[in-house]
Image (tube, rainbow, N blue to C red):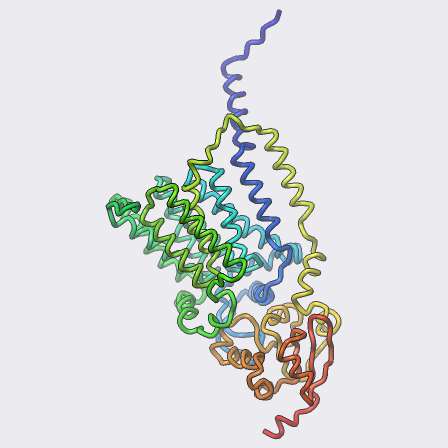
Length: 503
């Protein structure tokens, strides 16, 4: 009988190899991969967004000319008027991906950003609760809340930076100090999206919460140590100064305040700036999530850190006030809810089945590869929303002999796909509100002095969505004829300028 004796060094090596396999294919990694698959399935397989067209054009022009935009180049109504591209940095990944892969590239950047944010929320929830199961469960609520902004949007980069900031602050509280990276984050953030101001609020909340010591019912606060407080003060100062590292200087830093206080019509007119409607399915589910969170707190009483309570209040208020901030609520609130479920969802590492987990993960990866949309699929799904058929059959060869009045949601599409036609308006709302065109557009589509407004801007053509009040009006108004029509778009041409002559 032969007995194999394994040397202690070899045995230690085998043990280390086994541990690596268990970590690599462990249950926490499996849940992470499965959640990533769910996110992939939930993200709409389309790139329809009113902004993406002019974002792509901005990036193309700036990379070709190596100069930043300072005026409007796309409309005839505000041509040459001052305008700054306040999201220039976030536009570049979309454009470079489009150059490399076409529509699939735009979708890939969108998907990558959404995956990064939601997996970041999963990581924050795991960090807060210590339970991967609890983090996995609550992140389905985050997925639902975040779906309000799924699409090729520069806003996604703002939420990514917020998740990074929260991770740095959570590490700082736990002794893993990488806080000096925060000024770099803000220097990138200010050039990518105006949501950096939320990041400053979050930083202030965390810093100020450590200025108190005490317990108030279920709320507790702990003072920062002197070195921690000093470091937070320096990092906050440097992060504020980093905001001015941008091509537009103080004007870019003031932009979020301009949006909040001067772009009233923008906020009043755009759906995502409206309050959450609890009569809609989304509103009812959000109400159910809030009710479940309250119920969990009543059942599983625990202590809340002062900054956690402030995050809860900020996230809830923001989400109920503006529907676009449901994404903010997902980032700020959902990781905190994982704590309430942690004790009920223990994880036993010794019950892991690494090879079964590996097989499931491989299946998830294969599913993503097989289900990843092609360029043709993406274009086909967008054609029902944008005048794609009209562009291919008519507009790309159309050179207007006068001004064109276009659908607001189609402005960005025309800027990218029908470049020879200067638009009346697009979703760069700031420049049009500042110069009065947004108000005129809204009056025109609401059939309030529509014909007078078309005369005011010497409109010769109207390209608009079919079956809208304005198209009905023009169908029944002498002096206008249908030049092109399909199931999505209709193009009118003015046949008489008598109205202008009478004026």
